[in-house]
Image (cartoon, rainbow over all chains, first blue to last red; front, top):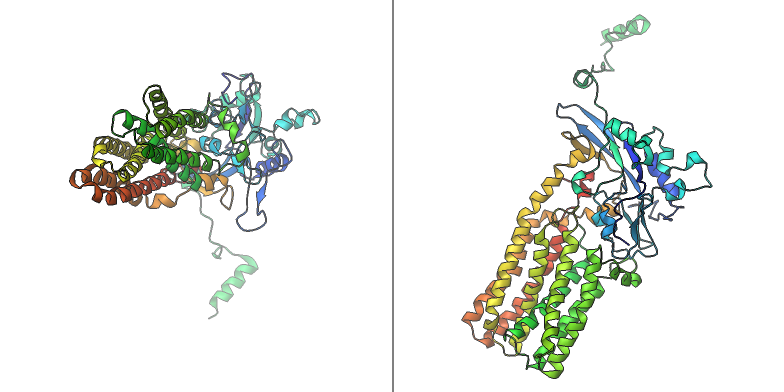
Length: 251
Length: 316
């Protein structure tokens, strides 16, 4: 049923650290790699090696320039994927019962055998997390690697979502956000983890850790020493300095 | 939002159809349409049933799996799309019964009045649930207003009325008898559409202000410097449609003229001035203009509505 559960036993989700993410796209790549053979397989591509390549991806990383009111600016890399919302409108709007939210762990999934491909769920998602598969005629989305995290064929340390496993900077964390003592819950408290677009009222499970405040902003940004021009030879000494001075005298 | 041709065809055709179903039994009950004219009954009810059926079928054209469309009737507890499907199916038995009584019995008195009553209720109910599908989508601020629903509830009957008048005048009924009801629906539609347009930009700006806060910390400004993909993806194709926004103001003017001004002149003003033989040459083009107006309005309704996901792509 597409009626949402009042509460779920666990709230499995991701905590993404925007301070540490370097935008390397490794999570994007490993997500595609795992999931094109996983629960929602295949993640099809249109014209993958030609012009106007397109395809289904569950994870997209944007890059931004962020400017503070004081005028200092820096880059920010922003991974965007399903937030497994508590109040997931994508599930409620589904007319067929293909979309559902699991009572046990809160993961939002699509039953591909029931999906009619009406796309309404993708309209209902403010985060653009659902992508339509034109070849299969059904909607696809992040499964939180449900086929990894419970997979007893994998070693315990590998039972995490592919994006978390592969992140080289440790910017992605996975755990139970319902348990106040879990590592992810502690991290959210410590770093002031935030909801994405809270005004939508979807109560996303995933949290984003904001970038840390820069220390000594004034000296690092506004008064950064300019590099000496590469063609300034005034400081040259020794043999090269002598050659420089000699050549300077020639007409 | 990308305006799928099948969705525009669906909402335009079924809007006219449900508009006729919603109003014809009422017009009969108030003696404005004569139920003793069986041919008139057939000429009104059969096209109406045909249009809602074409509309329903065309709404399945854009599905990835049309053969599973029956499943869409199952989740009426949570989904307005499912409720719309259920209401659309529920409207058939009373509409067919009423059509049978009008066309074959030449009278809709007695128990058939209840079939007419149920036809009116389910027709308005279908228009209401259609509007609620869009009204309930918070990520599209332009749609997330009661004026969206009011638009569906008034434009369907207005276009239905235009077709009823055009057909009835062919059966020798002077359009002046529809004057009062037309004035009501032209005014209601004008209020609904203008109120919808009046808040559209402000509704978007409310969310666009939060763009920085959504991504970085509140108070910071954010500029998109690199997208996650070099070519358009599903999200951009479906929700980043921008063609009509460039000409939105012109298209609104065209819509106002065709959908509101034309019916006001042709169906409210001219009937007081002209005798029937001349009027036929006005009301038929008048109905065509009204339908063209609603088709443009449908297109604009989608094309003009921005989805908040475009904020991540730097749309302002």
